[in-house]
Image 1: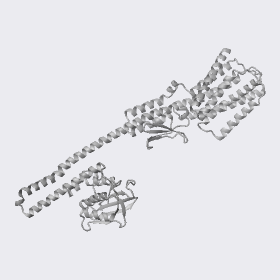
Image 2: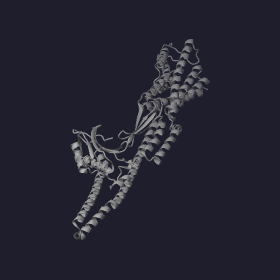
Image 3: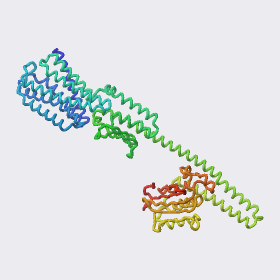
Image 4: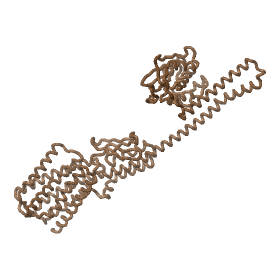
Length: 576
């Protein structure tokens, strides 16, 4: 039995010395409160195990007596240092903290006040020794129980590795307490009780090791659930998710699960939030860890224990964040490709529409003009003055129609190429709009002008003319009187509206009324047109950082409103 006790004692010396070295290395790497307190705990325990082999059981010299007393004090402080370690993550109640602190201080003073000579193993134990041992064991048990309960309960919501590490520390604190109890009951250094106490201490060292710095293979085995979720997330990122929304939807929850995060948010390089995930954790004051990724950042609201117990899990977040950044880039590229494809399809449709328009709209006036010119060239001498006048008038009408169509197409090409420059000038709106009405050929009181005399604004006159001309012409052609042209300043914008009391725009045509070449069935009946007027008008409005809006009137009628920013510059906020 003596040999077994000696072997187990040597193993304990090695184990607790290694634990002290591991704890010191962690503190040097991290330099935070948690690492400091755990290092103090295991260094203290390692010192006790090491120096205890030097100090004789029956010291004779004063130095030996002092060392023996200091070893007891250091051993007494070990559970209190572990308790301080738990406080680095979450504070305890003031009452509990004061009670445990006072109890520890009392036991330290009692230890220092003990008689000069303490009984060795095998010696009779006086009453004062038994009383001290009971107080020592009660204090140690209370401190260890608090440590074990706090770590065990806190680990419930943590991811696998952190939870198991915290529970290993809780089990170790309980195991070493049992070892202290068994050792206190053994009065023979070579008894089975002493050997059992050594084995329990060795087991606690193994548990402490697994809680402090578990081996890599153990970590991998513990991390299996999170690892599987991570692999599924990576597969979905690389194979399924093709847009930013899909990437965020598939990656946020697995990210949060890896570190037990209460919230996680992904932002792009400009600080715009791409997506977020939140859950109830009860960790309102939990730290936020920023993990950079390509083209953005991942902000993880971790638990209080994750920065210490989940270092490798945070590294997994960094890996997943890098993959997420690549997936987001791929999603953006895919979105750009889809947008480019839509633009190509739209351009192809516009080309098709243009060919159809040219075939239909241009062929008719060109054919007519060609026929008139041939008639005038070959039969002008046989025609009377009245007939030649009719042909000349018809020729002028058809060429005017062609000029109007060509101008519209040129306007669209310039607007598409963003080649239209906006040059605001200070305008007296009533005078300007009166000129616009005159250019439309509105006679007499066909259009009522309702504009304050003093209303002025810095606007581009060309934009005002092109848009208002189109709206007034449409109201006169397709609407019904009374037609009213109004202007007012509101919400930092100039609002110019044209109202009529006709049948209004058919509800099914409203969604496409501003599309190019779009014409309702009613407009096709009432007059010729290309379906380009409203599209050009809205493009001019938006080039001026404004908007062209439509509102149906009750009981019938239409209201088109040109909204343009008003101010010293035309770069005010876009209109709603």
